[in-house]
Length: 251
Length: 162
Image (cartoon, rainbow over all chains, first blue to last red; front, top):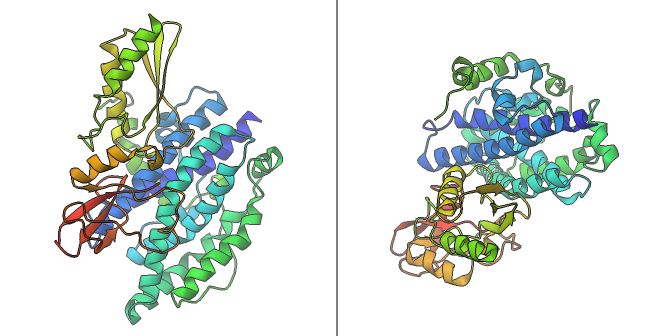
């Protein structure tokens, strides 16, 4: 029981940590200062959420691992994040499309986690995170509309980004092995039940953006069981190099 | 005796400033959620404004040091629930914010107008006009949005309402 809770907390924590790390790569590189600051702010929120979730996961698994040990001393096969979130940033459109597709899911997931009373620790983190994620979701949705309903160039490129990333969205709703534990405990409804509300929300914004809703097709999976793309290994190498080289470094 | 120590710690907290809003104290921001004594250890409950706020560590340290001036054993405990909200910032503090050039949170957090796509009216803290424009919902720190005034043309920070 405790280990299932720890595993499921890692789903949430790793989603936040890996996307936060990816977004932080934009710091100093975005096309305009405001967006540079915005993406870095979102990254910061996500890493903050990851810290709280990893700390709780460490307590649940009861092996005396703290947030740093879980973040810096696990290998790719031990990470449980969605494949979508580890993909390289691509161009700004790819980054925004990824953010939009995930934010819409993350919002539904945190809303459900904030409402439940079966696991108060998770509810506490979720009720804090949801306030932040609503801002992220409002921001990414605005960009989708601005780019989709913008110039021919911006429209065709954001459409391409959405189409390309769509096959990674199926994984949001896959109830792998231990997901059932939280459903049984009344912490989180089955992930599959989020699919329709997510699709409704995403479709409404895509329509407003005059973009096409991709047709469902074969979906990628693997992140929740530790089968990742090669991109995650490079990301971890960069993120973990310092603590692995100097394990007790403090600053 | 115990009450006396707790009162003095509380009083001291009224002069611990937020490093990112150095004209406001942690008390004014509503970040201290409780001060109590457990077996001769003063326990101060602190709630972060944003989970990722990089100032939280510095604030924790400042609070620890300040309280240690009064009592030798101090623990600063991070509490997540109830989640921090700008509703805990009172009107006097809001006025102070505006005076220092930061537009205070408008209204109450239950008002989700911004998230539903409506832009909030955020008066310019300098010339007081309502003709202002949101530049980005993400400003110089996690807790602020970036606005610009269409009359006096000054860019300014708005303390986000959450």
